[in-house]
Length: 152
Image (cartoon, rainbow, N blue to C red):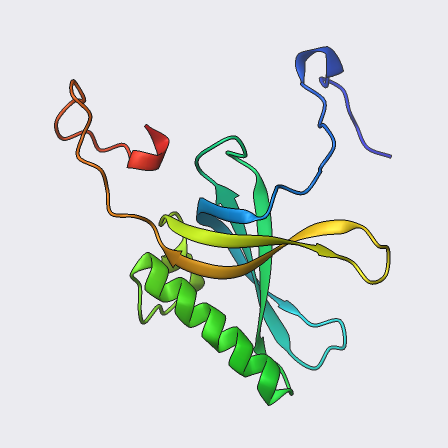
């Protein structure tokens, strides 16, 4: 049992349906990263959480899993290629820790895929690129504003 004293559903918006977002390119940042063991227990994958930072799907989360430590050479090569694309997109070419990739804007390429086990349509991050060069500050924007452009 869990103690829920103090919770009032009247004060919290309920979660809606978690439908996939349309395929396309979205500006996002990595908000979390964690190494997790593979289901088979023979390696580890880096799970990255991406948050869309602009547009009608702002604040939506998507995930990518990179099989960094895997007995399959092919799986490792794919993961290393994806990690290289992410590093290049955010401008951190030799990270010592995945946290160095957090909160740096990039463009994620999202597609919709049908799950083989349930037939459900889900999102899959299938590519990464640099965010377009920053736009000059809008007229009337305060000079020296330290708020990141994607949060203004």
